[in-house]
Length: 158
Image 1 (cartoon, rainbow, N blue to C red):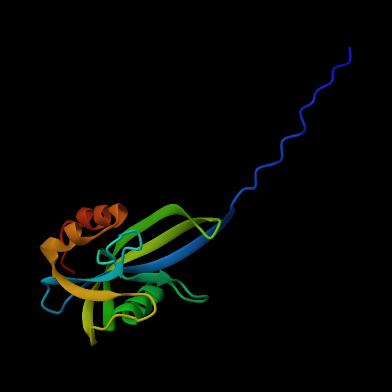
Image 2 (cartoon, rainbow, N blue to C red):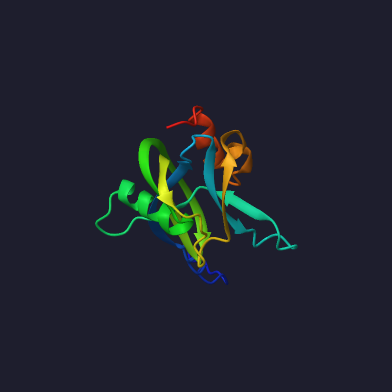
């Protein structure tokens, strides 16, 4: 038995290319042990252009770096503050789309103690940087995964 059809073969749907990214950063506690350091970026989806999304400083791990080395470097680059790691807070991983690619991002988070430096936002990537009372940190954070991570750490002292 022969059959005929008018249907042309369905074109294959293009799949977004998967890219794996690994970053490191975390929460810096000031020398007095009462404040935490957050970075702010203006919300591009906010029509007023005034809403700031607060998050933990972090950035990509460069070739040859450990997550700890990258975290210390990124905190200093984004905030002007030098710090030392006191403990690991854990790892967050998530997916998002950017530039037609599926990004799988893994972020290593640490708790730091402020060592020195001068508070200054990195011009190219950060709009604001500020110290907040530790009891306000979870509420200030814009991203649910970071909120959960910091809330889970419960004791916000190094």
